[in-house]
Length: 302
Image (cartoon, rainbow, N blue to C red; front, side):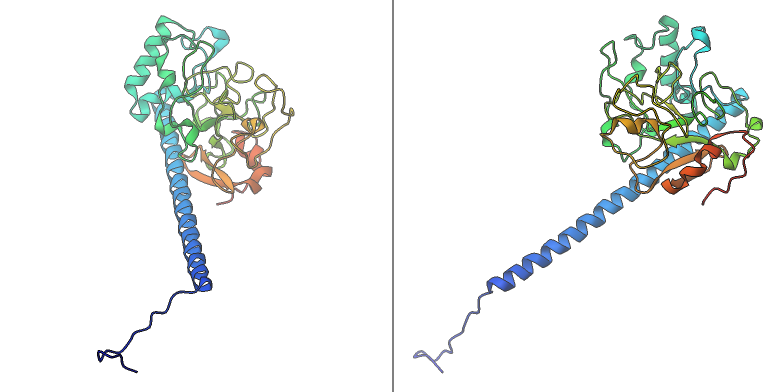
């Protein structure tokens, strides 16, 4: 059919509502898949970086061992006669992670005032990236306040004190000074560092110095495979002992066991400086892995 001017008319076909809904649905599905992929990629990158942080901390501990002849004390107390009372093992490895200036600042502060809560101890407000897990956005900057009103910085990596603070059968606990020669269970079967995010209210998890549960650093920057809660920081948690299982940032009771923001398990640095991702299903062997000389026969999953 032609029009009066000799041209052929064209017809315009509109899109139906059903077709529109199908297109919108496809776009939403694709968007969801892309978002999920991005989230998985970010989680994977955070896990890789976290493992690298723990490897560097393990190397720092070994370099300290080579220089001093033993690993640093998990926390220094010595009945409060020590030059740096309540100082953490993390602070002591500062010179071995290219933080010499921060260590010198720490030494100066303790010479002037042994009370780590003093405003002179400004180092405790410094975020050391190597001490934090990229998967925990809460601790990328200093927060909270100590009893003196100063901000504090945190750590995601705790020294393994053994089965608990009372047994002191690990490598890092209050006033410990162990050599690799003390690890008769084998350095590849003995834990040195484990993951645990700071507590829900950020009262536990300071990297610089701290009392922990019983002025022994427990649950602060030290932790055992079967730690108990003594209700100093929370009255809502059972005594335990606690087990290696998944946790949540907003659960105060998760401060008393190893866990991580990574799905399925957490990283651990072993005494041979290998870093392995242990799944929560390995909970039954964690107490044996936490001891330096328990004489147990343990096969660690790869």
